[in-house]
Length: 76
Image 1 (cartoon, rainbow, N blue to C red):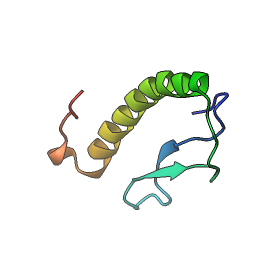
Image 2 (image 1 turned 30 degrees about the vertical axis):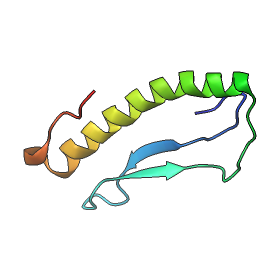
Image 3 (image 1 turned 180 degrees about the vertical axis):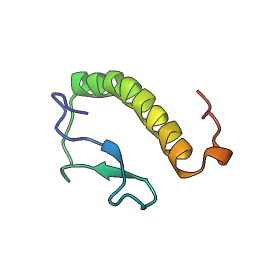
Image 4 (image 1 turned 45 degrees about the horizontal axis):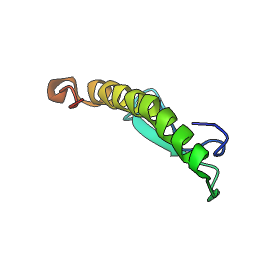
């Protein structure tokens, strides 16, 4: 997530370092603690809605990769 509130806020990806490794989700941030004004908070909330949808999709992907027999759709 990147906006006027900052950069690289809660970016994530599903990773597998080696072919036989168990997939994991990796989260990255720039380590800053930005001060936000009201408009930036509103922008962050709006962006977080789509970010949350992406996170849920990645979670389902990770569940399927790690154990297809345990796969279940997350609650929306």
